[in-house]
Length: 394
Ligand code: ADP
Ligand code: MG
Image 1: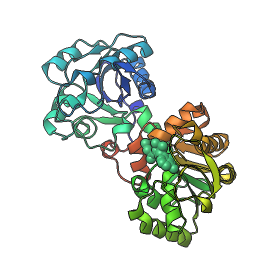
Image 2: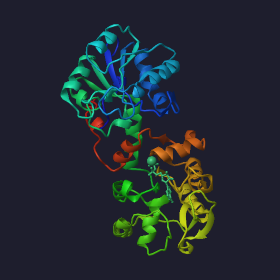
Image 3: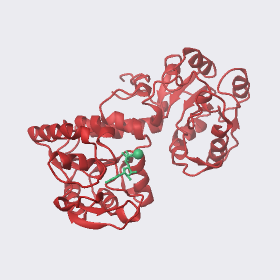
Image 4: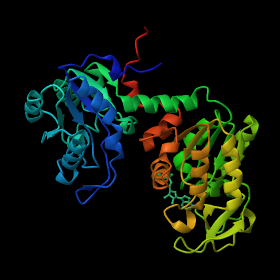
């Protein structure tokens, strides 16, 4: 059931509190990646065109419930102001009289940004008192912070119960893309999972086993599955306590007719800073470690990806931060980009890899929420989404 959308509400002259995810990386006061700010522009622009009074609210970093100016929204307000070509007032408060004064001075189409909502300990505690102070600032609530939707906080869940609540355009597009994966995907549906650890992705793997035709596993997490097959993986990163779990997953996959594929070759080295050598997967010497999938695996995975009608990718295939070990991630990224199937990439590092490679435009949906997109694909109910009422039947 679709959520009530910001597109369908009359906002002219109304005070609209918009929860955004402006949790951007900042290095010595400079925003190093403004993707998340840009992602909220469609909602902000829609509200400006429709002459709402816009109140933006976000968290930034982990100030732990205290005012800590290194986590102030000031650089974000400045960047947004450049992007929308309009001055944006920063209220030097999260809520309360100072914020109320800033909101009162808003004209139609104007924007005020509240300061970092995590300056208030009530945010992460989902304190009803903070929800009420936030609700007092506005007539309507819009949640566009998909990246924070897996948290039941005052500004993502609590306040939604106190005001008429709607999904923003980014929230909507995230929900649409991720739902498309989970309900009636076009087949074959291929999931590619990588990254460092099986433990981070266990719930995702288990949920996807019910949905996909093929599961391609690379990255550090493949090592635990290789161990389960009795392979010698030398000094590679692995979670020995999860070997039994990995065997169980492989057995379940077999039972359900899901092809679970592991690397057939690897790029190995004696050190993460060393050069790589390619070996067959059963030839990994005891004192070396696997840092990437090898060329034969890239080719096999690539052919399967090319046949897919639906693709979900999370987690790099190797230590892509090092040029010696980025070929696997690059190869898979290129295959996903070239595919004509519906493709979704989620996860902080996988998305960073796609962007570094300049392939983002060739992916159907790049999720802005790392943790949130994983929880969605795990089949969990995200509190920030649950708090928005479903669209009324027309
Ligand atoms: P995402 O953020 O896309 O969900 P993860 O955070 O789970 O991905 O994993 C990314 C990390 O996994 C990267 O830092 C990468 O270096 C690491 N990684 C991938 N393959 C290996 C490997 N074979 N050995 C060690 N680390 C690996
Ligand atoms: Mg990561």
